[in-house]
Length: 414
Ligand code: HGY
Ligand code: MN
Ligand code: MN
Ligand code: MN
Image (cartoon, rainbow, N blue to C red; front, side):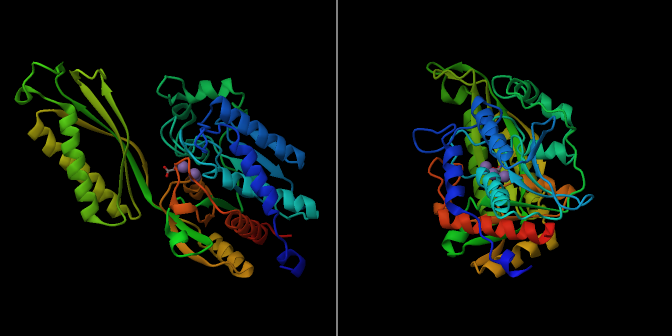
C-alpha cells in the first residue's frame, strides 16, 4: 500500500460528534440510550444515518428485514463489495457505543475516503442490521440472521414483542419494510468494529482486540408451573410454589456452571410471574435464560446440565418445569485472511493489540456464514456494556476506526 495511503487517518473528532449526535436519540436521564428495535427512536436513528450516508453520495437500499445497505461505488465493475456495519438498536438501558460504534466508524471511513477523493476498486457497503440486541424481539441478530439464511422471513416477521406487536408490523409502521429480498450477494470481505463489552483489553492495557471468533449462545424459556393459592392461610408445607422451584434450580445451576469452567456464562435476564399478585402464590413463573461457552462441547455440557437439574428439581419440588430452547447460536471461527488483514492493519498503525474471542454475540456471527469476516474491538470503561454508564475513550474509538479503514482498504484495493 503506497505511503500516502499508509498515512491516511480518520477524523476522530467528527466520529465522536456523530456518536454523540446519535446518542441524543433515545437518550435516558442516566446518560444511556433506549433506542429499542423498530421503535420511533430507532426510526429517528435510522433516518439520521440514511441522511448522513446520502450527504456523501451513497446509494441506499433497504431489504424486507429493514436491513439498510449504504453503498459507495468502486472503480471496477464486477468486484464484490467489502462490507462493514453493525446495529443501531439498543438494550432498554443500553449505552452510547454498543453497535452504534460499528455503524458510525464505518461511516467515518467513507467520509474520510470522500474527503481525500480516494476511490477503492471494490465497492464499499455500510450496513445497519435490524434487531441485533434481541431485547424487544427474540431472538437476537435476527436481521443479519435472515440475510444469511438462518431464519425465514416469515418466521422473523412473525416475532412479537411483549405487547404483541410483530417485527413485520413495526417495520411497516416505521417505514423500513424495504423491497429488497434479504439475501446475500457475493462479499469480498466483511469487518465489524465494536466495543469489547468486557474487561480484557482495559485490564491488559491494550488498544485493539483482533477478534478471531465468537462464543456460543443458547437461549431458553424455563416455565415453572405450581398451584396458585392464598398467601395467608395456606401453610408453607401445603404449597407447590413455582418461585421456590426456580430458586432451587437457579442455585444449583449457578454453582454447577461456576464449577464447570471460568469460560461458562449463565444469565437470568428476565422473569415473569402470573398472575403477578403479591398475595397469591403464582401459578406460573417464566425465566428467560442465557447460557454461553466458547467451545461446542462446553455449550453442550451446559445444555445437558440445565435439563438434568430441571428434572431433579421437578421431582423434589412437586412443580412442573418445562425447558424450551428459544435460540442456539453455535461458536464461530472468523476467516483467517480477514483476521490477518486486521492484524496487518494494527501492526502498520502501531497499536498495542491481542487476539481474542468475543463474549458477546454480533451480526458478524451470521455474516460469517456467507462471507469472510473478522471484527475489531476497542476497550470500554470497566468492561461495562448493556449499562447506561457504558463509555469508551475517544482515542480508542479513533484507533479502532483507523484499523477498520486500513483493513477495508487492504481488501478493497485502491
Ligand atoms: O447478546 C449478545 O451478546 C448481543 O448483545 N446481542
Ligand atoms: Mn452489539
Ligand atoms: Mn448488545
Ligand atoms: Mn453486535
